Length: 168
Image (cartoon, rainbow, N blue to C red; front, side):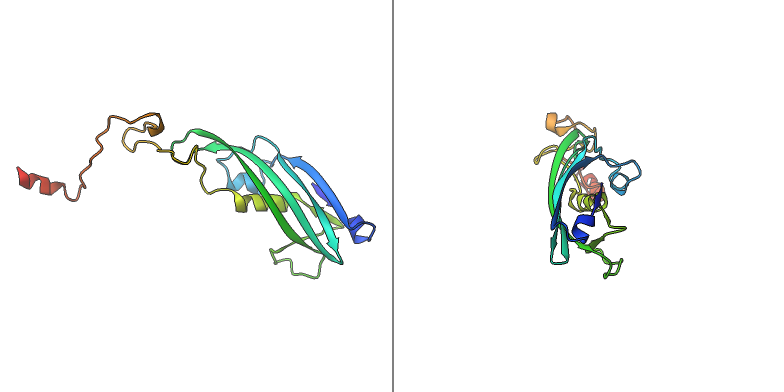
């Protein structure tokens, strides 16, 4: 979403409210980085841009619902993430290399880029179906959340297996 900043820049308004939703495009950085995550539902964003005597701040609340697989048992998981953040807005006196600011271009502000950036910072590195997920058996691949498997539980370290022959 592109927000028209003219009311704040001209002094006609001190605050611009926004409320929108979007689905990340296939070529967006968010989809590229999280290729195993399905953003099936639209990402909802609400907030405002406020001018405080020439110092502008973007405040946003983001709600993301996504589907992925459990990192331990590979079962499908639907999870939700709620993010609140603030980002400073620069008009042009600041170096473009500074990541602390978002920049107004042609009196317009792109809101999707900082939202996607914040989602990438807040996304968990791995998602679990439940906190006590037991995962899969390393030998047979059975989901241990459904019950134990019949695999041998005690394994001898292969480096020490030769010592077992001394007992014979």
